[in-house]
Each structure stands twice: as structure tokens, then as C-alpha cells.
Amino acid sequence: MNSAGYEVATQPGEEPEELPATEKDLAEDAPWKKIQQNTFTRWCNEHLKCVHKRIGDLQRDLSDGLRLIALLEVLSQKKMGRKYHPRPNFRQMKLENVSVALEFLEREHIKLVSIDSKAIVDGNLKLILGLIWTLILHYSISMPMWEDEDEEDARRQTPKQRLLGWIQNKVPQLPITNFNRDWQDGKALGALVDNCAPGEGGARGREDLSLGVIAPEEIVDPNVDEHSVMTYLSQFPKAKLKPGAPLRSKQLNPRKARAYGPGSWALGARRWVPGVRSLA
Image (cartoon, rainbow, N blue to C red):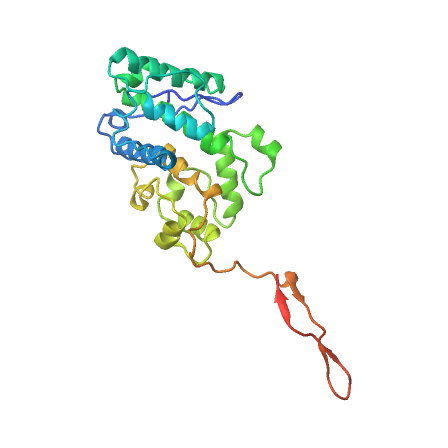
């Protein structure tokens, strides 16, 4: 069980997270909990928008199973493979729909801990957050292959190690070792944005990269939790610039400069002068 109060499924060979949690941290109105709920809701909506669906209240809107089924089909790019109720007006129908979704996750070999259909239908927020975090770990961090990544290394690493390693490779000038305190002064985020959108650091860069899962003020909030930060940062490996976004070229490597063209011959000493230069 982690600081969020829910158990998280782990990768083979990975030890469960054990983080100290104070009574204040576990309170229903703990500030980090609201940030996490908002972050996870936005993550779901980023994926659901392609099927024109939306979650307004994460605690209640998954209860009939329909948006959960839609989310899983988008994430997996597969159909459920089982019939479900398109108009679940009764509790039993809702339970059956959620069961269809959870059984699909079992077939996908995604391990769920302490989560059943009743918990989702009854709006158990703690377990719903645990479910969404499991989906984030699997579909946003574990599954995708990222640029400049070794496939064998990726298989051996936990999702947390993998994301941290990718970030460290992108901003080697900063000693980033965690997903909480190292992000609170904004420097690491600015450096990462500048690597992905050179010359467009800060709010403009985040806007051009379309990273809408967490509000900028939330990622530097001392109350933000590790899961929210990881959810946000997991977007960077696959982030695309918006069409028309300005881009400054990264620092030029003189060794990659090449000269093309016939050049010219100076009068007298007949010294060859390079023609038009092209910088790779």
C-alpha cells in the first residue's frame, strides 16, 4: 500500500512501493488527493476525446462501465470481445459492464489488486485512483517504445526507472533523481520543455507541446504527489509540437557542418574557396 492508500500492481521482480503516510496525508480532503484526481481525470479525457467521450467526475462517471470500456478500447486499440449493456439502467447491468472491463484487463495480463466491479460502481475513489494509476503505468509508461531507448534495458527496468532514465538522458545537466522535490522549483520542467521544444521553454513551450494533463501551478505545488508528476512527465516521450509552433534549432555541432557546391578559384594564387555551405 502506498501513500495514496491504495495498493499498486507491480512489475515482475519489483518490490511494492512503501512510502510513509501521515494521518494528514490520508485524509479525504488531502490537497495531493485532489491534484491526483484532477490529473488522472485529465489523462483519461486526453484519450477519450478521440471517441468523443468525457469524464467530469472520476468517482462517479465510471460507475456504469461505459466510459471505462471506451477508455480501455482506446488505450489497447482492441475491442472488448464481449457483449455489454449499452444502456445500463440497473445496478446489475452496471456491475456486469464493469466486470467486462476488468476481465478484459485480466486477458491483457494487467494485474489488479483489491479492485472489483462493486468498488467501481459504488464510487470507491481510493480504488478507482488505483485502477487509473495501473492503466497509466501500463499504457503510458511500460508499453510504448521511446526515442533513443534500448529495448532490452526498457524490459529490465521498472516503469519508474524507465521514465526517470529517459528524462535523465534528455537533461543530463540536471541531477534529477526523483519525481517530487526535484521538480518543485520549475528548473527541471523548463529544461525538459526546452529540450522537446527548443527556444520555447516555460508556459509557451508547454502550450505548444499540448501537455494538458496537469496545470503548471500544480506540478510545482509542494502538495503534488509522485503519481501526478509521473503521469504528466509520461507525455513528454511522445509529445508532438502543435502545427506552426516556432522552433529554435538545437546547438550546432561544428563537426556536422558540411560544404557543398563547386566553390570558386581566386585570381593569382588559385586558392580554392568553398562555395555555399549547408549546416547539418
